[in-house]
Amino acid sequence: MTKVAAVQAAPVWLDAKGTLDKTIALIEEAGKKDVQLLAFGEVWLPGYPFSIWLVPPMASMEVVMRHRMNAIAADGPEMKAIGEAAKKAGTYVMLGYAERDKASIYCSQALLDDRGERVMNRRKLKPTHMERTVWGEGPATDLKVTETPFGTVGGLCCWENIQPINRQGMYQLGEQIHVAGWPCFGMFKDIREAYALSAEANLNESRSYAFEGGCFVLTPGSIITEDMIDDITMGNEAARPMVSTGGGAAAVFGPDGYRLTDPIDEHTDGLAIADIDLGMIEGAKVFADPAGHYNRPDVAGIVLGRSSGPAAAPPEQEQTAQGEPEALA
Image (cartoon, rainbow, N blue to C red; front, side, top):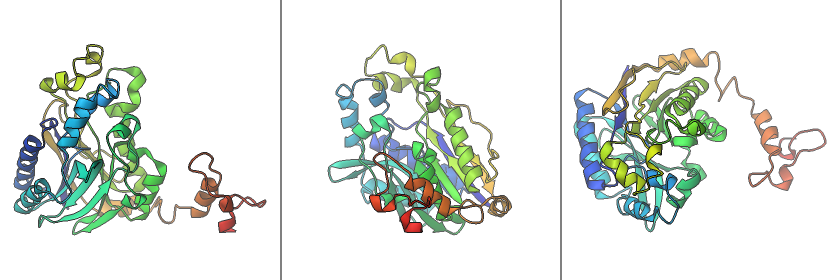
């Protein structure tokens, strides 16, 4: 059995130093509870720049700049301090963070092992909608997994988890434990038109990832506190009704889609902790292995060969008269 935990907590918003201190405290807490893998949500450090969704792009530049100035380097002192905390706690840590690389910022995930070494780093492949005003894109090679003593670990950020190609790519890498890093669900949660951004909708996506992939899924995320709302809304009174405190929804799902942890009050910092057994994956995949006996790569080739628009296959991949891509004929 392996003990894993998804973090639900409020960062010290847009404050790298304050959030670093809280990160270390949460790692210490996890170590005392013998957690072997601790997962943080999307850009936990220094916090998600919510304002980009609430005010016009140029008006949100103050928050964008604060986010940029509190981003950290993959090999910087903050990451080294988190590695030291992971080493002392004897736990692996999947960190969601804003990564600075020269003059660009990326929405990234780093996996640190129980010796404090960074063993994986990846960037969100396609930031969603307004996020493209803040973060650059990661390379396609950033669909990746890492072998650990307790299983094959991977991760995706937020709506990367709903992309069919991303999912299939991770399944084919043999992912056994997946970290679906989410931001807070304290925005738009009472707005019917924004249901797609709700905790319910995105936890359903996480559950379906577990069920579809036959893997364990951890869903860490952040909380909005009362003292953050003025900063987030930037004085825009029309935006205030769109933001609520709380929004935490951390959970762990098993490879059959079953929820393994009880909900934590959405306003409360905590760890969603579960003991997992990789043997459950065998039980799931005897029925459906999307990267093996239940996979039809020939069908995938034909379907993708029919694509239109910017992701269309090159001309040589177009279907032949027999209905197969030339490359597969």
